[in-house]
Image 1 (tube, rainbow, N blue to C red):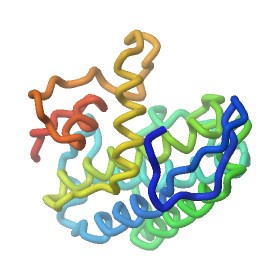
Image 2 (spheres, one colour; image 1 turned 180 degrees about the vertical axis):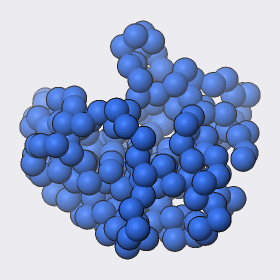
Image 3 (tube, rainbow, N blue to C red; image 1 turned 180 degrees about the horizontal axis):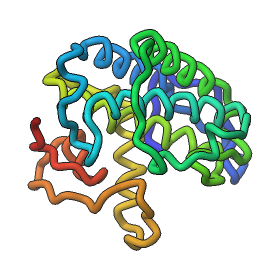
Image 4 (tube, rainbow, N blue to C red; image 1 turned 45 degrees about the horizontal axis):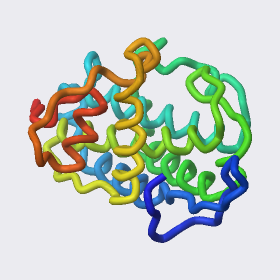
Length: 212
């Protein structure tokens, strides 16, 4: 895991050595600000996510925030057991209140070092708590870019979150395509010297040059 500034309480890795945990709060707040900047006329516009309009992307963010909150608490049930690709997500009438509340709750529960230990479940997949926390943060980083790009907003992700995403996606890119599953599309080539953000976007299967 990359060097962390503004650390959270230490966890203990499998070798018994303490390490610092990433803080999801800065990136969650950024995504909430981006969502607040989405005007109603943008809701049906396209996004970098195939088959997702902006409204579907926002609905996905609501759902993933709730699911990874439950995963942190080891509160396993319908929200942690459902494959997010099984249906097209959408927003409810109160999404402007629900999404920032869900994001704040998500970031807060992952401040507890217990969330990063043991086994949990997300998207119907059993996985270690530490990996679930990293995936949750990566989702906020990548979908933050999706939302900003789709709605014409500036995007400067949290540096710690960006580093965590880069490490995670770089490791995933070396895996056999069959082992990668459907979480990420095939990496997109980027020129030498591309920014870390462009590398993260490309490693997630998106074209950093995409515009609506």
